[in-house]
Amino acid sequence: MTRRDGSIQNTVWERVALRRTRAGADPDADPRPVALPASWEDEAAEALAALAPGQGPVALPRLAEGWIRRTAARGRKLGILSNPEAAEGFAAGLRAILLARRGAPGAGTWANDAKAESRFVLNLPAFLDEEGFDSAGYAAAIRLGVTALEILGNAKASRLRLGFADLAGLLAGLGLDYESGEARAVAAAIAALTRGVAEAASGDLAETFGAREPVSLLWPQPPEATPVPGLAEAARAALDAAAGAPGLRHSAILVLSPPDAVEALLGAETGGLAPAPAPTRLVSTLDGGVAELPTRAALRAGPDAARLLAPRGPEARVAMEAALHPWLHAAPAGVVAPAQAPRPAPKPRPAQGQAAHGRGAVWKVTIGGHRVTLRTMEGAAGLEEISLTLAKDGAAFRAMVDALCHSVTVGLAAGVKLEEYVQSFAYTRFGPAGLVEGDPAIQRASSVLDWAFRRLALDHLGGRALPDPTEEECGADHPGTAAQQLPLLPDLPSTPAPAARRRAFRLVG
Image 1 (tube, helix red, strand yellow):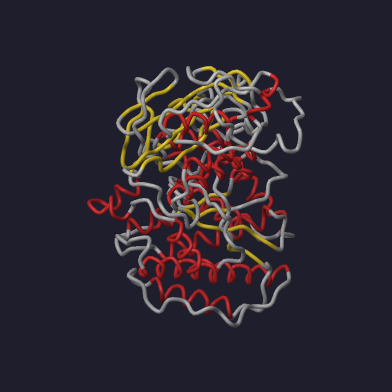
Image 2 (tube, rainbow, N blue to C red):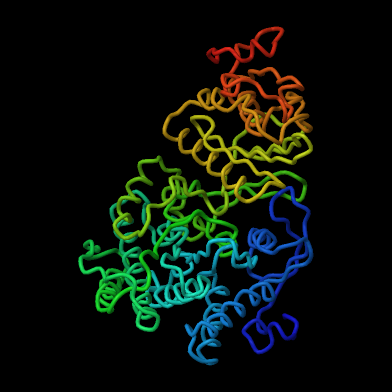
């Protein structure tokens, strides 16, 4: 049980059984003591470690109470929460949806980062119930999210960022194929329900603080029916309630933002409307290898998991985005990376620095003293997915690398050849760069992408070894020319020279 102290006394946390473990924010980070609900998995512990500033012990009750109490107190000060009873009810609601893993604010709120743009995410699979989908519980969570964002914006923000995650996991739990018309109808109804409830809540705030925007009187036509009982009716009722508001406080609310560690804490396996990457995920084993396990979506889908969660081409996501677009206040990011990375794995040759198990491969190296992890997935047609984890870089840089890897994955699924990516990214130059430790075939790299794509060429392009850059070319102060900054791949001369490496050529398989 949790300790009885001032931070959690007389709250629901006193009745929550916790387990203690050690977890790091990423595979190469030093583990720290973590306490979280006993039923939550190790991925949630890693996410909790990522959300908590510093390197010391972290417990979910205390960390959560920090932002919950700060938000409730600010809500009282702003007059959004009219009395102490309203503030306590608001705080209790936030605790309840967090413990049910239904929703929470983004990472910036957990870290009390005043510069971070506030967001609130709802984990769709957590609203599955015996009848299909808990529309009433979902509507209540939306209202909590809008209220929290209004408070976090000091009642001044005209645009909020409320969104949902793991649509693919919800559809799998409902037994719906992501590419089917029924799945798109369910998704559109959920988006319409989200928008209707959110704008109705914005209208309620406008009555107190003043309206900034007119009410939308002409809605897109929501689905008349879906395979989920009551969902279409709930969406229509929410839109009707929003239309009756005297005005809106916000010009935009429903936005699908790129995910952060909060999605992983809630158990969401994909961000926003992205399709599931696979029915299995890769986890580390005690002996240092990796094992392939079913995803939570696969467990919900049961015997149909392989069919419902098979990797999808980019056209499936485009069709889903088109179905949801009329209800979103902003177009989703071009690449919505998974909140977590469930990956079935390929079968390259094991070597020093590489752990392999089944069809999985994980390379762990250091580049210029910086730890880097490369994971790949291979199917019948060859390489299907890659991901890179960097231990020490900032969140913005990691997000950029994640987005790039996801775009490569989408391109491979669409038929782009790996050779094209190798030609684009081998010999690119940016830090970290320098000596490579842990890869016997590559001694130096001019960037993380240089090492990763030359390693992919070794593993997946017939064992072709591309020459290492020189020490000078790996230096941060190597200026080069404008032409030399282009990521061009050399011909593989027997005695490679820097000038030869910069000439345009073709990769010969």
